[in-house]
Image (cartoon, rainbow, N blue to C red; front, top):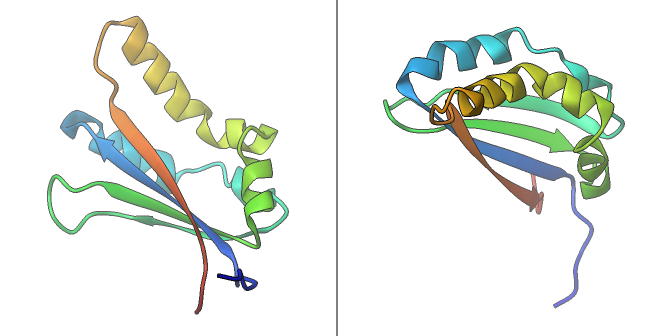
Length: 113
């Protein structure tokens, strides 16, 4: 099966938060550094709040291509954009607490719009 060109690349981060971390999580995104916005190939991002209690948040980022997304991961902007959440995770571990959130990343090529 031949691969045709795609019309973009999407990364979806599925994030489960502990009940006591929900407000903090939302605040982190509402006051985000917007560092990702400076990355070449970045198009847009949505943070989706679950309509039903207990469901995960989805962070959906749109990119020109997979290479642009991969270049962002590990970049200075990536670390700038995540430093507060990374600090929350580090503190929880240091104090012997369960992580306040967990995440799972999945990536997709856009087939059609």
